[in-house]
Image (tube, rainbow, N blue to C red; front, top):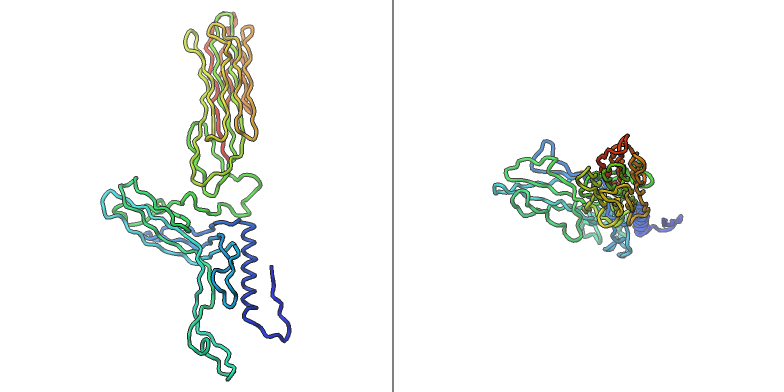
Length: 416
């Protein structure tokens, strides 16, 4: 940080104080950049209903930090400086907004609260100036003009309430943030509504609110985790741009045994783990969880392979397959090939199913970090996640056929 030098007996200049202020602002800007990047980043500025509730909401104190320049305009006697600098707008008091309900029955409207960094000169005062002709009688304003002058340059968060177009409830759209503005909150108001409750206020998914403070941070990913045991959609949380994903493919089912011939076990699903980057808060990613293969029935249906699990198009794990040499009348061969991981930073293959022998069904293949299924008289379902089913035995006398079993479903785990 630069510092001004002042010497005994020297005449102080206005630029001494101005340069000190600017140097301090620049130092804070670079500190903010090293911690928050070039932004934007928002802390505080919580939106809430009034108390008691009314048709107004308030946005509380807080800050908006984003990339700007040192000074767009002259700063006192200092010239403008277009050097990039991270600046913070600070609001110490709350800001209120009044909303109106649509006038047509059955309609609703979405309001957007948007924000931007505002810098302006403020606090005008008529300042005393030195009068060389009569030092005991100062001038009132420059050249004794009586004109007032701004005495501070303030950085604030400026807000704007932007209404959408009323439409049938459920179909109303939120207006887009204007260029240079950041959407923070959406407030939905329906026809006939007389108060705004907390449930009507939602955060814009892309709003760059700081999700954690330093005491809550720890190495690696935070505390967020979502397990998918069935297919669904992952919505990227606010402030998140990367996630860690683990994916297990599903295990295959096993054949039914036939007299004097136990069936082989199903094969396990694959596994992949990946760090997925480049995500956008609010983005939706389709998640598919593979279903375990079905088991074969005595004299009936054949088993099926395990399904593939995936996280979007970024990472996947295939399910365990059936042995192409196995048939309903010759089911002794174990399932193969096992599933594999695809697209991960770490990709593992599952295990093939083992062949049936004597009167015991073959072991089901394991998925990585899953478990193999023990053999027995009956076909046993695969071990979750992604395990292949065990084969079916032929009973104590070796001549009794039994049904096969289903493979275990896959799994997708997302952490951020």
